[in-house]
Length: 345
Ligand code: 13P
Image 1: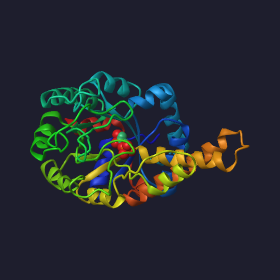
Image 2: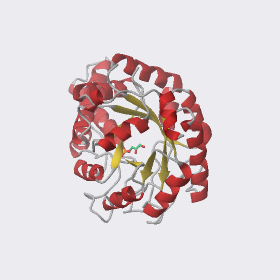
Image 3: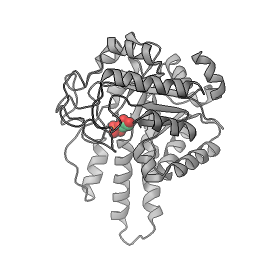
Image 4: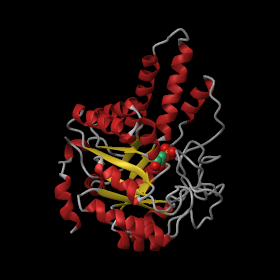
């Protein structure tokens, strides 16, 4: 079984200067798509499940589908990561259920809506690090609230997102504070705010420096060189998939995501984990709409689901390649979590 910790994977990524896409999972076809893309490109994998995924599929289904993925692809190292844990209790439950990495998102209070104080964030994140590191599980924290620098809105997505209008200060991670946060919590990875947000509606135009602050990544990386930086809200919102969705009855307004070249620039500046959910959802929705439209007499949902899986697989393979992840699966020798414990003492 090739489960590994996020710490091990991102240490490797830092050593060899690549980034790892962290894809959100909710169902069978998404997991198969990601694993097939990883197999094809020989890439290590981060599968991440949010509270929304656990609500949709149920924790036992997710756990068993991921076990099936690892059994089917024994040579692909897999990190099972919990996305946006709202409290130490949620993180502890995920650790118990076999996750090898958890995110404690203390930038928001437990309701996943109200921006939290810095002290609250330090307190809950430190607590989770103590619990997780005792058994070799990695921890991602978040500093700064994800939100659009264009509108000041965080925008709720899948149950997570600050409510109301945020100031620029809240939406941009401060390098000096990042240094203090890492020293006080001991996180392995840090999600930073640089103007990205979750979901399909990130920017109303191709993003430039005033609304997507890629330059800030280098300053944060310099302040916390041994902590792996995480870019949330990193879907590129492919225009070709928006067009396919619209051509087949969908109604999505004009929108832009984070261009792949900007993510590559982020990776060169120190980003190691790149969170992607929306792009998979867009590709699958587009492929299913097209499949149903092409053959209205078809009544077997597997036809549309296979089209969706293939579309997601191709998208994931492109991201593995673009982030420099390809080929690294075979270069990682899985370290059991029990041995990762030593790293923290
Ligand atoms: P996207 O909505 O841009 O795919 O971001 C997903 C994410 O950051 C999950 O934590």
